Image (cartoon, rainbow, N blue to C red):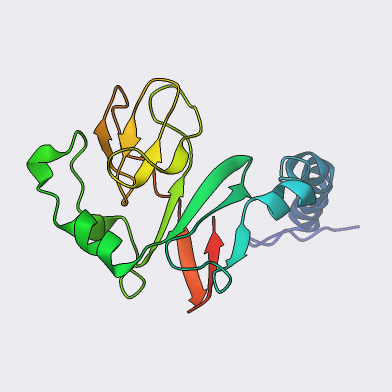
Length: 174
């Protein structure tokens, strides 16, 4: 029986390619459960964002909500609080940052900050201290109505978490 070879592909080449493809699919099928188990659990994803309704927060009121196990202060600032925060010269601040950089444009009355003192991690008290912001009773750090450190051992301002306005009365933190 004569066998004619062609200069193209042979049956053996096809078998090699098919075997390799089946093997690759098999390896991918075995690896996928290990890769998918690295994804965060649904309970973790549920905690990654927090939606807050701002409508019940009265002017001048500070509300504390939880996000990722941290207290978040939401301050509905009165116009006088916004003006006072914007009138502070940057030279008087320990960690200079303009008030405009700490709030969302169009919603300047709402300040959203992480409620943990940047000195040793205490939770400051709202509407306390000389600047009508926050006062940390542990070591005496004081923050103004924009969450900027003004007095004390704290080296940095209260951090602003990532948040977006989904409507005029709702925000999503995270």
